[in-house]
Length: 337
Image (cartoon, rainbow, N blue to C red; front, side):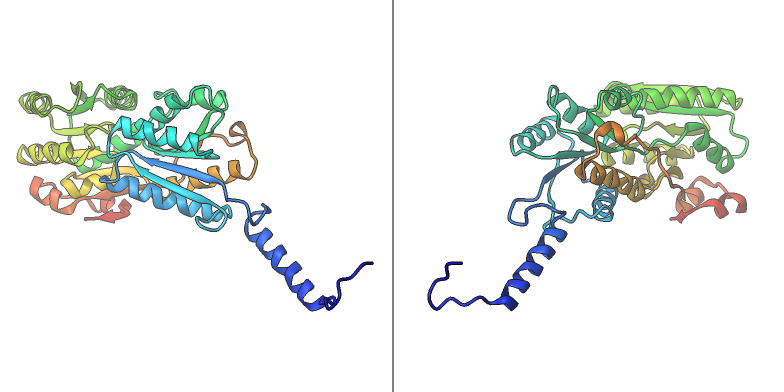
C-alpha cells in the first residue's frame, strides 16, 4: 500500500468520521447528507382566518411525527394566498419549477387551483381543511393517483342535532350559502335534506359571490321569512371574517341563533359550532404527506375523515339571544366562550 511521507494512519479520527457520517445519514432520512433535503410547499388559502393557522400547525406536527423536520431533512415553503386564486396558482407553478416533491394545500379553493395548475404533472397534492371532498371532485383525483388528504367534513345531521338542542322548539330553519363553491352547494343540499328529515321547515337563501349588497339582500329575505335559526354551510366565501361579522351581527340583532362548521367563527358572534378538530385534521394530512415522502404512492395513502370532532359554544351570544343553554348541551362542549 502506497503511503505519503509524514501522513500516518489515524484510526481514532477515521472512526469518528465514520460515526459522524452515519449520524448525518440517519438524521437526514437515509439521504446523502450533503444533498438538499426535499422541498415541500404548503399553500394556505387565507391566513387571516384562524382555522388555516390551526391546520398549518397540525400539518407541521404530522410531518414531524413521520420523521420530517423543516431545516433538517425537509425544506418547507409556506405561501399565504390571501384569498387570491392568481397568487395561489403562481405559488404552485413556482414550486413545480423548483422541483418540489409534494404540495400540501389548506382549503378547498387552494386545492382546486393546485390541481388545475398541475394537470399533466406527477407532483402529488395532499389536501386538508376541505369541507366536502366528493363535491369538489377530489375522490376522482385520488382514484387517478393525483391527490389525497384529510377533510374537515362533519355530517350535517350531526351538526343539526346540536342546533336543535341549543334552540328547543325549532321549526323554521334558514340555510345560507354561496353558490360559487361546490362544497357550499353540496353541504347546503345535505343540510336541507337532513332538516326536512328531522321535521323542520327550510328557508334557503343563496348569494352568487361576496358582493355586500347580495349578502344584505339574502339576510333580509331570511329575516322577512322569520327563520328561527340559521345554518351556514361549509362555505369559504361566507366564512371570511368580513362576511361572517355581517351575518352574525344581523342574526344577533334579529335574535336568531347562528350555527357554522367553523370553530373560529365563534369569535364573531356565532352561537354554536360542531366541527372537526382542525389541528388534528392538519396532523392527519401531515402524516399522509410524510408517508408519501417516504416512498408510498398517492393510491397507497387513502383519504381520511376527521378523527376528532368538537362542540364549541358562545355563552355571550346565548345571553344576547336570551337562550338558556341546557346542562346536557353544556356538558358536551369542548370549548366555551
